[in-house]
Image (tube, rainbow over all chains, first blue to last red; front, side):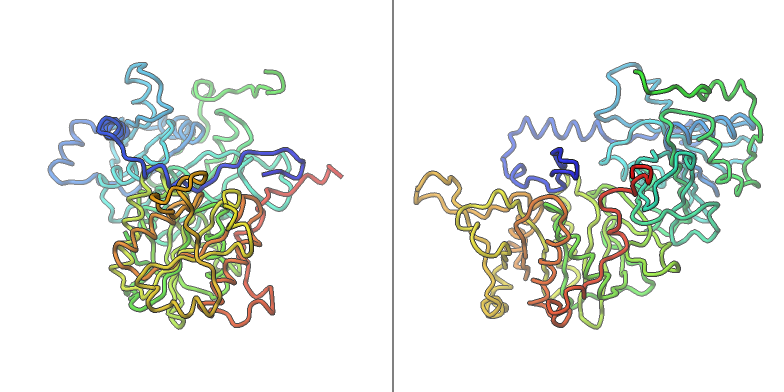
Length: 278
Length: 262
């Protein structure tokens, strides 16, 4: 396809070549494919007490499930929420795919998708996801996680990072307008989102979309707050944008109003580097 | 798996189903969008499956501020009960390794729902046409034997052209190799068609040869072609703008440009 400026772009076609699957696979190919599929499965590992109660048929009793997808969303929770109270890591999900690092020990994989629960108020469950979950794994991740949760009176809040370059609007976006929040919620969500709704033709993809789809068909109250930022990498201004999204949950979660600079320094890059010279 | 979004389950008995194949230029999907927005169809439910890449957004067919905030998912079923018409809109690509599973899911659902006939709107790469296909109209149709029995006369009357079978090895004139059905860039079109032939489902494929780019004109061509057969709108060709373009088609070529450019 040629653009208005004349350069020819190779267009990614959504049409799948139908001939590929006509080929008869030999046994070895089939076995490789099966093994790959097994390897790509999503696994959840819970702490001993949680897995014991899950085994006996008791699902995780939580009324608020907060899911942070992306570095800024996850670090926002680390800075503003997880430091201010006693939180226990209760489990993690491990996902293997084409972007996973070659055997560098389990640790990095394990810390990329962790579940936390407050010690004195187990009704709030937090999950931080900073790893890449492939398109074919999103549905399975969502199914596996929601299988473990008690769905009655469950409220789901998803915080998600996005680049402002992906945001479409008829008006030219002035550089001072980013970062900003947009929301998208399921039909079962009865509250009022703290920000403007995501305008058409913008869409949400990835894990937030998988969670929204699941919750829409299962009628679970869910809201996604998508933060459009113009900074690549974690920064404190983008993190702060998420603040209003959680103030609604004030009764169940205490936000640290002014985190110490030490904490911030640990999680954010305070000097925004220019990308003019690489 | 079909999940109803309404409190009482909808019956699709004797309905006509129209669905797109995710194919070159997304022509089928655009045509289905035109149908849903013009005929004011209501959502009956979702196809919730792991075969499609997850995506979601607000109402793509919003007409006013009031109905804009409504979540929509990758595959949804809409109906116009008075026309006995149902459409399945697919908004996301099929995960490549799961296309066979998706085909099976669709065929099983069509069989279980009792649709009287199914129409697949599809497209194929224009650059892969052979000599005989280059001439005349870019529109083709295919019908399974069980639909052919009832609609053969209608297709003849319309003067439609059937999709040609092409030789398997173009340079060779070997009488022993049978010409085959070849729909490059058509996604699951051919698979759905052959599955339906085996299952004896009444199914038609309407397709258009096109290239990737601005495929809006192609979608109008295809939906008008379908309308010649099903008569969803009366005489749309006399009033070319009768099909209503949905709000979600805005900004197809990106955001606004900085005013400082000028």
